[in-house]
Image (cartoon, rainbow, N blue to C red):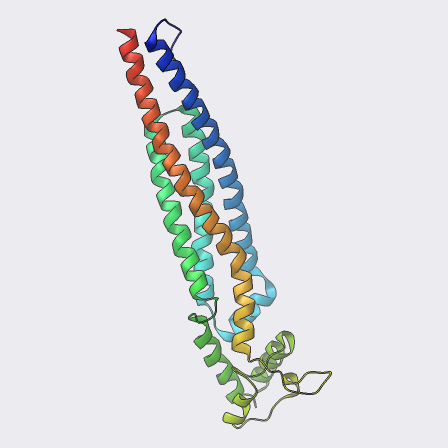
Length: 248
């Protein structure tokens, strides 16, 4: 920073120094928050990837596309943590080159977050790509219900979730298969009303909602940080110009 002097030049420099200090500490605080949320996204994605119950259903129903979004968001979480570290260092150093690098990495984190969220939502929500895959897998299991492995898989899904068939009990009639006991309510004895496509989609959607919500919040924060980074760079350049003029 510049030493004290007299006149308007000194006043402008002191004003710029105060503005730079505000931007610097705001950016530092914002990057600490970004690091924490990035770590939370990474932990949630890893937990969801290796959750035993979910992993078993995905393997049985061959819904591996669900993992694509998680893998991208795991990378996004790591990128966000690195980006926030770069942001703290560049803000403390007040280095324009480091800040330009930081602004660029904000864009990378934003792209990873948006793409990962899009893939995850496209394979976990109502009317998404996951529903035809669940339907196809469930109908295949029903057609092969005479085999022990298919019976166990159907029983696990229908009993645990409380659903019947792909789109309802009529799937068993359409495929000329007997209605199993796992399709019936243990209290009333009536078949479950909802099909497993709908119930499983709700389950996957609920799991994905927290992660995508956090990621969208981080993407907004990345945009704000990039804007602050650009303002910070301009303020530092202006301070250097004022300093040169004042020292002449």
